[in-house]
Image (cartoon, rainbow, N blue to C red):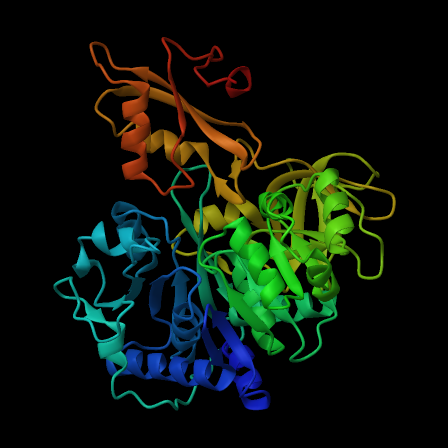
Length: 515
């Protein structure tokens, strides 16, 4: 039996007074976070939530997130973290697809509007049995009929709770990931998937108990931040300094004032940090404390690796993984000098190989193939989609859709991403989903979406649109409409209205001819 919440509970028992989360002047100890999570578990039990039930969570990087996350787990339920940028229509889809019985949603504030879309744009309260609104003022009344504030729900709940133990292979978390079908799929990750991935991260980083301070800029609803920072960090009683929205100047200030030893981010975040190093910044102090720097999400330019090494005195370690792999699957080999452009070697307990379209292994060095992964980190499958699961699984191996080569020493190098996928600022965006939403506009007849180079975000989303006969709409109007329909990281900032699109004889779009 096992429960992912043991990562919090063990640290709360051994280091109760150690700061667990920091947000501005607010500092909560491990004992306080654990007690609050126990109250959340008690709240769920009082409302009839049973072990195995799904409970969704929309919350930016605030202390509420780990409190509710581990509280859901303690109750034996399954956490369904949702992107804080999703609109009401998208939230309703995720709640129904996961079968969530309860939903915790951050209300948002003028200073921190993230999550506000979740309650302002979400009108279908009946999509879930219990709707808890996380408000900045715990005593405030709920502005939504049928919803209960978290503060009211926790009132009177005891700070102790006997955690519900689950089978190691039972689902702990469902992470939604888009696919080529355009519909987001829920990847079920087990308690053992996530516990082993967190402990393996600490094995890689050489983390010692109660010694590290993480600056947490990666969103906690994403597998990178939740595993590498939160789960791995909590398992060693690290202090998590929260930054709800990445801002380079604010991040640099926290690196300095909080004596941060651990930073994980996507390449654009490192680019931002380097550009925020003004004369007033004590770079030597930052470099003296910084112990580990980790990057993932997309390939890291060699220039950034060199600049970070020069300014911060730390070598960025690169890794690779997906939501379906908990997420870490490969990482720079401990004790070895990182190889720029490489995603490293398989982590402990995980196998990686390259395959062709028929699952045949590709063994020659530097020959390109699709990455396949097998090990303790592989997900249970896509919830409610056995056919989609069968398409990517065979004999325990998960095929990623990402193309790579392997050098003679066994280090892997990504050469292409999953077909057509766009990575904007570290977020995966699948064109098919955007195209289908664009077709919902009354003036749009056909669309094709691609990624184009962008200095800050890596890639930007560009849509080519053919209008219906007689329809009139401007490119600017389509951008504005898309902004209301899709999360901020998804909608196309560039729209081009065209008369035709390049196609094959069979009618398939030739996106490679678009730019």
